[in-house]
Length: 143
Image 1 (tube, rainbow, N blue to C red):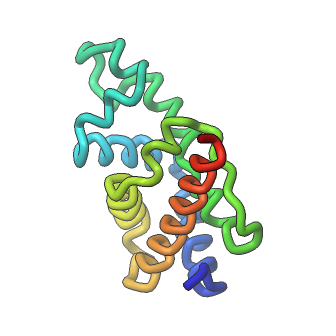
Image 2: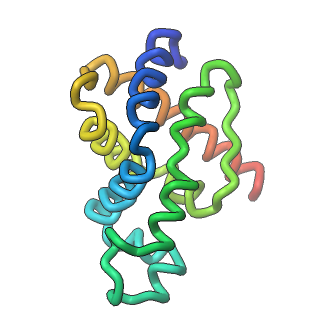
Image 3: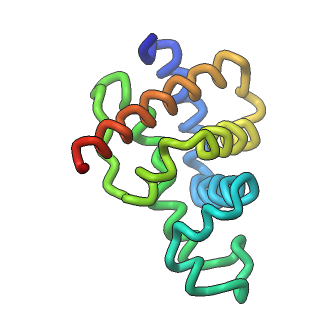
């Protein structure tokens, strides 16, 4: 299908709203991933090593990591560039999973309820699907 101009505009509009609170939203995204798939915590050495001493919501390394990885900027550039560079190995492993798609859509819906619509959901689904395809392609190249 491809990422249309209309879909890009919907993604950009919601991303502009989310950027105001991106740190908190990024953390919520990861918390939602761990809620859906608790075993995903094992993919992060800093979470494995810390045990249950620090609640995830206040784990400093998770907060820092979430902000650097929450890559909606890639989605907003997708139609223009047609290419996505994914540097983070964990994101590559996570990015191709349904869990991340569900967590992303849930997080965005909660972050921008005033503009959320079936069309916006479809735009983010298309952006995610194209990002996941780019991630899978990078994984093939790396293998």
